[in-house]
Image (cartoon, rainbow, N blue to C red):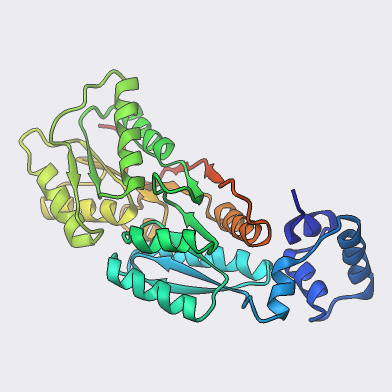
Length: 332
């Protein structure tokens, strides 16, 4: 495999941004560091395709990050960590919100292509399959972040949603909960988290009950609250609820409060994403955390590799989630 700037940075013990500056002869870099980097470049026979193309005007050092909903706090965290990794590699990140709308996705992609961005990182959802197919057919570097889209052959960097669902439900089962509700949406990630929910119940010898999975059409507090209300309005209401993201879990908290239920005394709640909301809610929300710094760094490595190597084999990287226990869960 051809080396990339990440390989050179690792061997030289410097950042990818430093390697980029040396190769572009810009920025304040000591002569000692320059010589060290250039020596490794020569030893590895590195041919900086991206950088050489940039000098010819082909590349812009800009990558578009498409997110479906700016109101969801997890996407602010996505931007933060991807941007940090991008800066280290010498790239700027341009964020575009698509509002979960296929037509807006098409417009944003067309606009970013006019701006000649070097590639696209698509986070969590993308409805317009035709546009995605066109990007891949045109050889545009594309990486999916925090979601998957079968049956497309495409680079993916994500968390293991299935294991995250397992971890959330196993925690609730360990506290004695047997009737556990779920609030989900129609995304692939949500489906995987629900699959983990069923697997954890089966592993614990708990029969899955009908009607305990409530679905939202969109991820909003209002819809999540309404979905939670349907669960909590049952005569045999669940003693715990797993929200497939923190917005859904927050909606469950609002529904519980309106029904006079105490969290966690009357109802335990777990979310997913471990956003800043978790510490703002009362009680603080137990949530499944994604390793976002590592995911951000990895997605930049994958997209730079795609630009420099353009190999036919696509990567699928899944990282392990971790449950962060706070005050919203307790014994049944």
